[in-house]
Image (cartoon, rainbow, N blue to C red; front, side, top):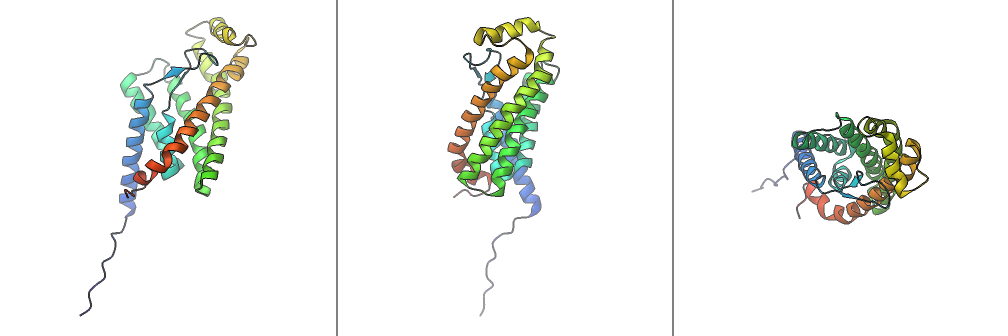
Length: 210
C-alpha cells in the first residue's frame, strides 16, 4: 500500500506579506526606542546634533527583507516618534530624519540584495555612508539650518560651530565641516554594529529559527 508523501507547508504570498509587516513594525518599534538614547559628538559638531543607533534595526531589516521594507520601517519609525514625542520643528526635523535615513538604508540594501555576501554588505554600507554624509550636508544647508535660524539667530548657530572649528563662518561651511563629519562617523559606527549583529538576527526575520 502506497502512502502519500508529506508535502512541506507552502508559504503563501499573503503569509509572506504578513510576516514582512510584522517584522517592519517590530524593527520600527526597536528603532524608535533606540532614538531615545542619544549622545553628542562635541569634538565634531555642536551638542544639539546627537548620534543614535536607530538605523541599525532598519538596516538589518532592509538587508534581510529588501529596501522596500527598510523604507517602510523608516516611515513607521518617524510616525511612532511623532506619536510619542510630538514635533517641535513643524515636521521639518522628522522629514529630514526620514530623508537621511532612506539615503543611508536604500543604497546599502540595494547593493547587498544584488549579491548577498559580506563583501557586498561592506560595499553597500560604505556607499550608504557616503550617501548619508553628502545628503546630510545638503539637507542641513538647505532645510534644517535655515529652519533653525527662525528659532535661534543664525549667528549664534555659526558661533557654536566656530567654537569647534574656527573655519565655520557660513551655513555651507557649517554643513560641510561639522554636519558632514558627524554623519560620516555615525554611518561608520552604525555600519559596524549592523555587520556584527546581522548574521545573528537575519534568520529570525527570514522566518528561520534554527
